[in-house]
Image (cartoon, rainbow, N blue to C red):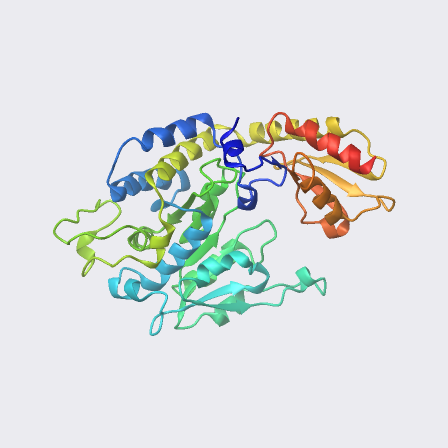
Length: 394
């Protein structure tokens, strides 16, 4: 009997992927063992984050880095750092940003629900560009000159959401932001693999980059990485740590927090709600090294083998076509035929409400296309998926 059986919570077949909604993927035994060991000792959390910073700086090519409680927490902390800098008074007032730089510039086609984390710091998003290429009305999107025009005296940062089709290019946005002495914060939550992306954004000139630790890296689901310029990382950490301590007693590690550059200790910051425990930090560090030890090709081959097992278990369907789509992130894709007798969403619901509960990717359900990710499948799951698809689609 599993711990979930004891709690009365049904385990699901997670063919959606590493989404938090379906609890992400799996923690490798060595990651779990490291977390267990970390939980058996007590440490100074600032010292632990400083040790993590040294490792993350090496891995990402950044000046510094910290472990966060997810990529969204990294966006909040990064934005707060851009607004408050190393001023404890400003840190104390967030999210009240009156009198501060309290705007961030974003390309309209990159807006998404996750930029709520950015807005939580008290900033206003200034949108630029009309995404005709996304709306199907043309080929244009935001252009560098539009970003430049939107930057003003109240601009705290430019926020860039990285993806394969993001426009303008990262390099163009870096050039514009830096020509105006404005930091660039990159949301790269889901930009792994390839592993080279851990260094790509910093290498292109980004000042801060937020990654998810619970997706391809395989760390704890509530973990992430924020890396970038040391002063900004210092500010982010100061707004995250428990700082209920007197000035005389406070001896933070100078490699990450230079106490003598501060007029005083900030109060608990806006990022205090993003607390990250010692177990999470240690687990993330072990996971990211494990992620880097596996070549991208080997990882893709492992996932492709799981996708092919789903295809073999499914066979030929009477009222849909099924195919294996190869690539860095392989998928098993089912496209409903006109005779399917159900919509894509109805298929998703039937899978989700059956036994076992199977959660697929519904992002193209309106077009009758359902895909299945191999990243979080257990060995027995392909057989369950194939059986249910045959039951539902002939």
